[in-house]
Amino acid sequence: MEYLRATLAAELEWVRLVVADLVAGRLTWSEAWLREVAAHLTSEEETKQP
Image (cartoon, rainbow, N blue to C red; front, side, top):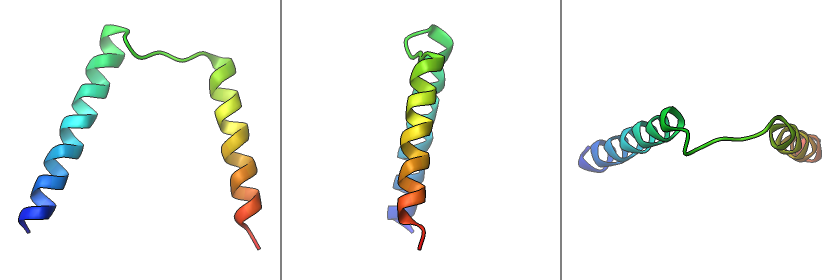
């Protein structure tokens, strides 16, 4: 149970830091980058299916 608590606390802190970076403008991405990532993930998913 202690491991689960520590893991969840660390994940929550990571989410809070990502949100803070988004709000402050330190973390950004372009539409082109999002499309590239989506295309890559889609091709990986298609490869995994039987």
